[in-house]
Length: 169
Image (cartoon, rainbow, N blue to C red):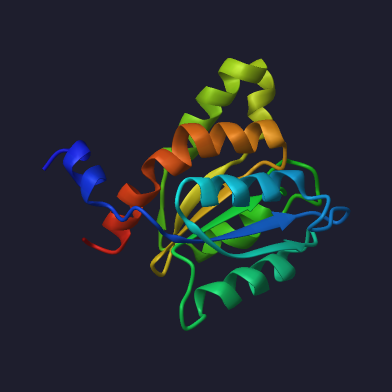
């Protein structure tokens, strides 16, 4: 079966959680996280939670672990922020060790798309994605432009298809 047939068989609606990493934003000022939640809803998904946590490895892991071990966990988590290279950017260090599978193409494809928009500044992103238990997890930069690019070009067009594979449909 080809990718078009697999894509067609994937679920149309998933439970999605949004996690924003920031020491300065709140839910009200979280432009990128709010955009993800609105877009997920517009795409037909159910946003089950949206939180903002500090740029702190343990806080990030706590929120993610709480969701994934919930009786009805999200099927996808989209994280925004903390993927850069400053000392306080610890999203990748918090999340990547939890992956049972890594979507190794996600980062390079996102970097290529970013390069087309921001030239060599695309090197600053460490965007990544993977699977924790039966949950897809995407780690995106905090900028609204980067979030829109990743969600529109990569995540939402393939979310049901990807989850179909994770759930082994």
